[in-house]
Image 1 (cartoon, rainbow, N blue to C red):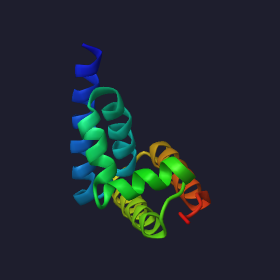
Image 2 (cartoon, rainbow, N blue to C red):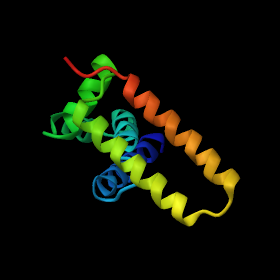
Image 3 (cartoon, rainbow, N blue to C red):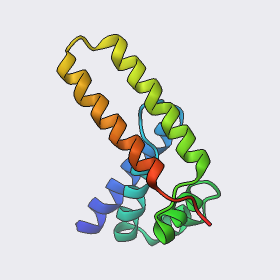
Amino acid sequence: MTRLVALLLAYLFLALAIVGVFLPGLPTVPFLLLTAWFSAKGSERLHRWLYAHPHFGKLLIDWENQRAISQSSKVIALLMLTVSWVVMYQRIDNIWILAGMTILIISIMAYLLCRPEPH
């Protein structure tokens, strides 16, 4: 039963990662990392496919080997975070929620900028 649950979660997170490619504000890489982790426990075939994928595979390998994020991924993430913050600024009236989200977004941006780029 555990293998089946891991497989179902792997496919769920893969679907969310794919949606995140096209939908601003929904992160792709964290869902992709979760997909890789759950697929390792639930499906050898899906796990191999992820690492062989022309786009997803490079992200996963760079993260696994070097804890690195490519410059293009950083730029896209920073732009999406900025767009998300602007939308929240326009729509959220509660100053405390906006302040908390601002701190969270700045923290994520700082983390992304501190990650090395792959060799």
